[in-house]
Image 1 (cartoon, rainbow, N blue to C red):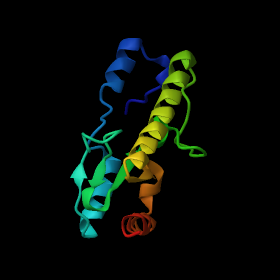
Image 2 (cartoon, rainbow, N blue to C red; image 1 turned 90 degrees about the horizontal axis):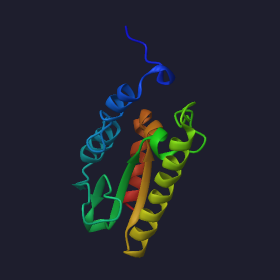
Image 3 (cartoon, helix red, strand yellow; image 1 turned 180 degrees about the horizontal axis):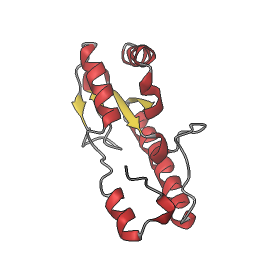
Length: 140
């Protein structure tokens, strides 16, 4: 079994690892999509014409859902939102830009009349609570 130690790999190895991180069709996104579909909700994927390209778009309801990874989008108070120990001059501004972009996209969507829901990766473990949250948002 290979144990990865992020602070002991070369720049090329880290680049190779980072290139494997997907932006669409991630595991957490697939969980939410499957749940929403099983609940009878129909949606479009990756709203290309909308700010932030939301993961799920419920056009008739003018609602969108973002499925955010806790690490990348900095879920406040979450144990998964760790900060790498090295290269902070790269990571901290990157995280800050991501959080600012997320807020800006939600604001722009609101200006266009869309309601947004952010679901965090760590919330997906409890499908009952997730279903209630999704239903409350979509049926309101």
